[in-house]
Length: 127
Image 1 (tube, rainbow, N blue to C red):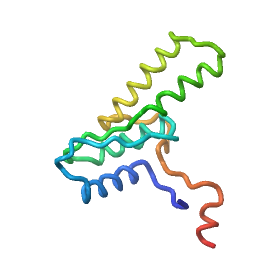
Image 2: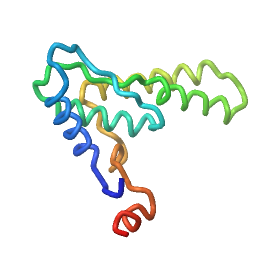
Image 3: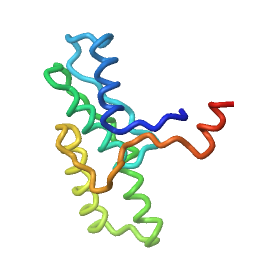
Image 4: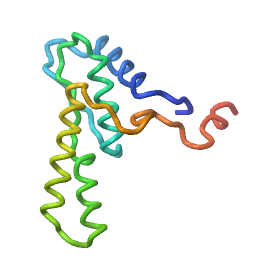
């Protein structure tokens, strides 16, 4: 997609679509975080839940990849299975995921969760 969208715009677009097509009788929906960093997934989910307003659903992610990849990266970097460090990181990640599910996560980096078009995408779209 050649257009830049903020996390807030992505959140509102998700709620707009869900409001039109997702039954109120459904208790919730879990999005797949696949391929997203924890920071981007959390920023986007928090934006969705902030935009949710009085919508009746529990909206979250199936967090497996976003939570597991940093843990695996820790092992790869050190070459060891440091359960204490991994446990500490996992608890920190769960706190981020929890805040995002409540719409209370504020990313530490400006623009986290934004869709940034790949280099050359605007030129290709204009052609």
